Image (tube, rainbow, N blue to C red):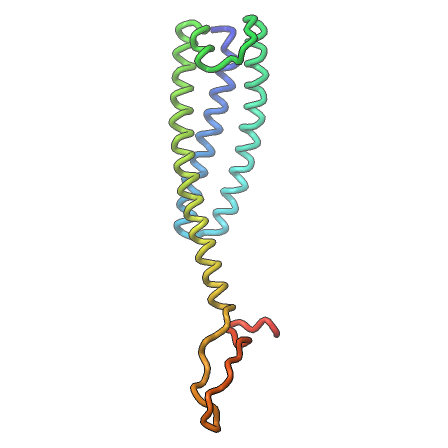
Length: 164
């Protein structure tokens, strides 16, 4: 287990980052439902910080995995499954637990990302629709002119006049 102690610590830190990111995604879902733009901005900034932390931990984990592979004389890629096989009972148990926990966290993160993406896309479509509706040529005209003739359509007549 001594060989895998540093790796287990790094995986634990990575799991904690993933849990924090998942918590932010849950908050973002609620902020999207409430249409709280300020909260979404705050959450996005926190997510970016967490992603940077995860990237740093991941780099450390990759370096630690390479050190373990060199120490064990393994030329192939050292996967979590291979490390479980090579570790003692306590280490294998902890590695399995971390693997399973990370799998569950990542599954929920993926589900929330898809849901949040759908909500954002729906809001953007609504905004696009409203902008198009507000800036499209108006079909409302008077039925007749003073002389009794039908007026010519002015396609420049819009709800929002961009010529101001």
